[in-house]
Length: 242
Image 1 (cartoon, rainbow, N blue to C red):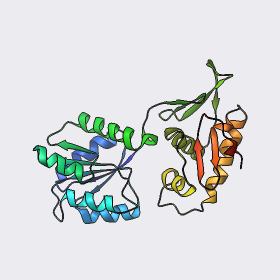
Image 2: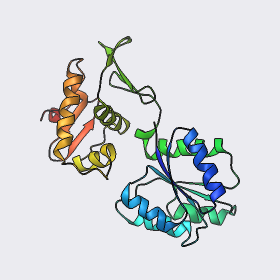
Image 3: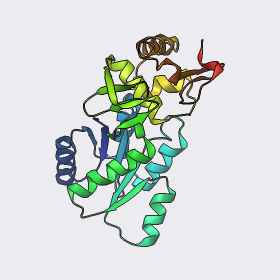
């Protein structure tokens, strides 16, 4: 799945090399040469992940990471620090500032891509390309297909045709199985925090998703938790009906 990555690096050659390899890996890449440019971009569109150089011309990457972690809107963005510093104390400082991982220069493009995948699996499983199989549903983010087993027989399945929004919604809920999400959280994570639509839009798409799943007897997987939001659960619940 395409992931939007903000590369904050003041060395043009390094920034260009990183961006090129990330684009080749299928990611959407944005660039900033300093913290000020990075903040302007983040204010407009929240990236899925930030690659942050330690040494920036205006403030250090450590300081910028701390600022991101303090703000409600940006505190959950995965951050990978890039630096030539190899001392253990430096690595600890980076992690304590809020970085999810720490890569020392020089590094290979393959290592960078692998580290990004690892961080996304931990922090944003809905952005991972891993196939999810839960409750008789098999969702493949790479092919953008969903299959449902019939009568709990894994050898017999049918393809479930979902629209783009319903697919993203199902993927997100499956990635965080059993976890309850509010309408606002679903809007931010599925539609994006830069899209201004009403909370009730979530209800419309939940109903569409349930109607599609109802045809194959899987609508009970999408449950309503009254007064809170929605969850994907393989456990039956009396609260799933709106």
